[in-house]
Amino acid sequence: MPARIVLGVGAGIAAYKACELLRLLTESGHQVRVVPTPGALRFVGEATWAALSGQPVTASAWDDVHEVAHVRLGREAELVVVAPATADLLARAAAGRSDDLLTAVLLTARCPVVFAPAMHTEMWEHPATRANVATLRARGCLVIDPASGRLTGADSGPGRLPDPAELYAVAVAALARGTAGGGPDLAGRRVVVSAGGTREEIDPVRFIGNWSSGRQGYALARAAAARGAKVSVVSANVGLADPAGAEATHVVSARQLRSAMLAAAAGADAVVMAAAVADFRPEARSDVKIKKTGAAPEPVRLTQNPDILRELAAAREPGQVIAGFAAETDNVLANGRAKLAAKGCDLLVVNQVGPGLALGTGDNEAVVLGADGSETPVPRGPKEALADVVWDLVAARLTAQPG
Ligand code: CTP
Image 1 (cartoon, protein in one colour):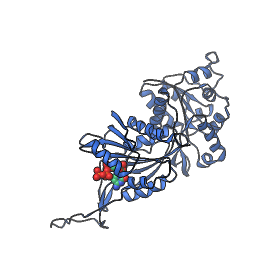
Image 2 (tube, rainbow, N blue to C red):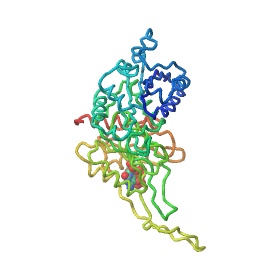
Image 3 (cartoon, protein in one colour):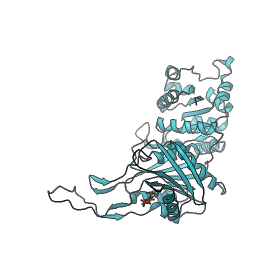
C-alpha cells in the first residue's frame, strides 16, 4: 500500500546513502517528502532530493509559511524515517525542539518514527547521546543501532549508517506495523537469532554445507529490530548485508556457531535458531588439499556435531523463550511435534523442504508448534511475514514477564 512518508535527513556524510533509501521508497510507490536539516543540504543538495522524490524540498519552517508545512507534513505522514540521524539531531528531537522544519515535523507526527543514527563512535557512545536515544525509545520511537565498520576517516567502529536496502526493509516493516496498529512491542528486549548454514571443512578448499541462504534468519533479525528489540544475529556463511539494527557475529562451523550462540544467549529474552546446522562434520580435517591419486578416494568419516538448540533449551534462563526451526521432507507435523519435544524448546517453526521449497527461496510456508500444544499455520508468503508471526508468539510468551 503506497503511503505518505517523510524522509528526514540529518547533517552527516551518510546523507548520500539516504538517496538510495529514497529511491527504494519511491520505486515501491510511496510518496516521499524529503525534509533535510539546513546543514544536511551542505552534503546533498536540494536538487538531488527534489529530483529523486519528485516533490518539493523544504528545510526551513520559514519557507512556504502559508502552507504551515511543519504541521501538515507531520500530521499527514504515515511514517517518518530519519537517516542519517546525527548526534545533534537526536539531541534536538529528544529535547522536543523545533528549530528547523524536520524537528517541527517530528513534534507534529503521530505515526511510527524511525531514527537511523550515524556518527563517529565516540559521539554514539557518549552518555549524552545514550540518554537521548533512551529518551526517544521510551517515547516509542524506533532508534536503530548503527552498523559497525569503517567510518568517514581512517577510524572504524559502531556508527555507520546500515545498508540502504536493509534500512528500507526496517522502514517498511515499521510502516506495516504502524498501519496494523502495532508498535515497537519488543522494546527493552534482547533477542538472539542464528542465520545461514554452517560449513564443515574437509580440507582447506572443500566443505560440507547446505542450501540455507540466511534470508529467514535475517528477516527475523530485521523484524525484531523493527519491533524495537536489541538484536544479536549469529550469521553462518550468509552472502547478504548485515540486517539493519542488529549486531552481527560471523561464524563458519557448527562448533563456532555453538560458542557464539551460548555467549549471546546469556541474559537474552529470546533465542531463535533459524540456522541450518550441519549435524555431522568430518572426523578429521586435512591440513592440505586432498589429491586425486588414481585409486579409489578415501571415505570421509563423519562425527556428530553438538545439538545447539537442545543445549540452549536445556540451559535456558528463567523466562527465556527458545524457538527453533524444523526442516522436514515428509510426515511434517508428526516429525515436528516429536522434534519439539526432543529439543525441549517453546516454539518450533516446521516447514517442508524439498526442491523449490523454503531453503534458499524468498517464500516460506509453515506451522508454528508451541510446547503448550498450540499450532499456528502461516500461509505461503514472504519470510518477513513468517518472522512477524514468530515474534508475535514470542512476544505473547514474554508479556507475562517484566521487561
Ligand atoms: N539444530 C541445532 N544443532 C544441530 C542441528 C540442528 O541447533 N546440530 C537446530 C536448528 O537450528 C533448528 C532445529 O535444530 O532450529 C532443527 O533442525 P533440523 O535440521 O530440522 O533437525 P535436526 O536436529 O538436525 O534433526 P534431523 O536432521 O534428524 O531431522
